[in-house]
Length: 394
Image (cartoon, rainbow, N blue to C red; front, top):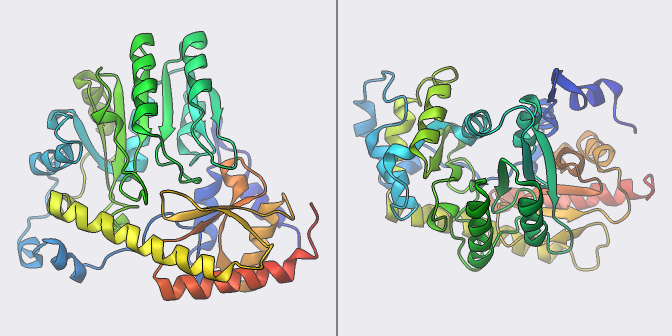
């Protein structure tokens, strides 16, 4: 069955002049609440309030909290805790706490880029940043990752840094949707060239801590100049999307203050309740426990996936080295938007189509669910794909 015209119109085109419709978020918003099993998410399944007690949060203490506005930039306690994530390489005054990493991305784009600026953007990617850059009139050039490893195209980036002298480079590391991430040496090489050219490096590091191999190093721990920004938050690795806590951390006081001033127009202040909980969650011992939890959840689900795949030619997965998802090629069709719609219609299983990452022929499948739910959902997905295969062509 073809994708209904009404659905297509809600995924394509512009929201307002210059601002593309955010395909992935719209796709999820339209379907996730009615899905039987949601395999479209990219973080690990969330903790409950009750479970927070196991991670150093006193519910009794929280009950006594006065629910005022709090600190617009984030409390000193929370910003100090975030600073420690980076080995104290970022001054707490250069950290701005936001309503999730989505607000942080908005503040960064508005702080860094303007009309006519050349900006390099990692691709495929979560398309929020490129959409916002187009809204402000920046000239977006993509740094295309390629299969099978989907590594960041470092040499291409270095060549464009020298030839075009862009205003900024935006990298998602670990990458969403491919899960690949840069080595310390690669980040050092990129940071050195960016500093030489006076280019701002913006790293979305919201999946930091999910690496199942060599641990990732943050741009904040590598850059020797002020011109870096790390964006992160508690939604993906830490399983706390409902707190809506993200942040941007930078070496530049003036850039942090500019983002803070723009925030006055947006969300004003983070939730006082979320701020208090987050300041406890981001203590070093708790961070280690939550990162281990995320890796454990994903590793278990990848074992399940691998156990169900032998003999199947339905999907060709890239077994990501990081992230709570699997980026997979569908070898028998490139029309993965139509396929994803039919999977949802026939089985109630929701996946994220590659078209929402500007990459046809792929799906992003969540690996962050509870293992028993993942097994049921992935088994049903394979069954539905098998039923649909004959009606699709390459």
